[in-house]
Length: 398
Image (cartoon, rainbow, N blue to C red; front, side, top):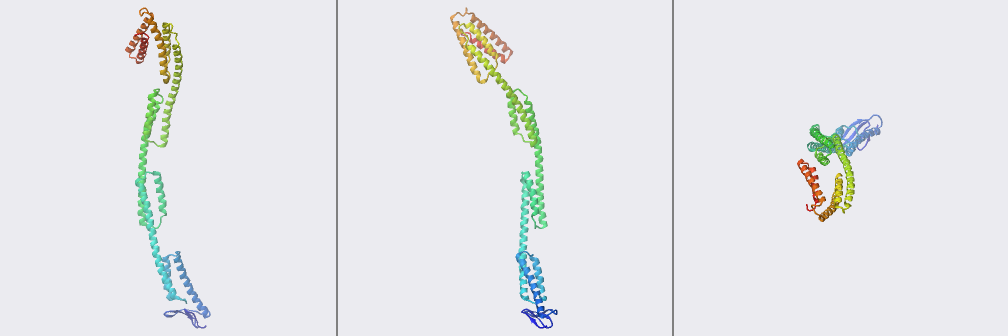
């Protein structure tokens, strides 16, 4: 074997391998397995492997794929091994690279620590915001369903937030849990109060329904209609029961109202038909009265009295026809009265038997009025007064 050398080391004839350093040569190994060139190449490859390992550490640190703390530990181990490394190569340069790599790992560890602290601070801030939101909900929210749903969502969001120390996380969770419990108690109290109010509303509206059902059979059309309208006003002012109860009571309330008004409409329809028929009869009688032959006033008076009795035998007519009917009948009566008066003027009052008969009938009517007043019957009094007025109007100068 002969000497073989390179820029960073050599192998002598005995197979001893030397590394050239700034402080001189250092024995790094022995090669007995072959020629010197192969031996030196082996130790050069070992340096290259070491260099490759350093390159890999640097690349992983720069890319962010490697953990800075682990990289620093591995780099320091490699750096500590350099004084005894059995390699041939530029160890001084590799030493400088490792020192630089350790410094870079320190810097990266600082950055990662800052990033972790920033992430921790942000995680704490996120959970702080969620806790504050829950506390606000617990204090003032009345959107019970939406608020309850939001609190459940907050729990899911809470689970996704990591990187907080156990003590801080526990303290924040206690705040959230306390807020959630406070909201649950306030919501429970609200619905308990609401149930009480709805029971009171149910009782109040059941009374309104009972009153409406009592009125449904009434025939006092005007007063009952107003009474039902008043009940409707009370219903609108009353608090609401729960939806199912409210709907059921409302159906009964409306059914009672509808029953009354349908019955009233039927009665009014019959009344309107009866009044229309009365109108036809009275119009026919008035037509007869208007056509009375007044050439014989006494006979005309008898005919008029008969027609008046027939007219009174029929009941009410439609309101819009009342004035017209009364006016037409008064005109017919005045025609006969005028004939009677003219006949009376032509003859002597004392010798006029017809006038005597009119006075006799007036006396009868006045007696009837006296009896009605004595009885205190308003209907009979009104009818008797009308008859007296009519009889008196037929007597000239009375």
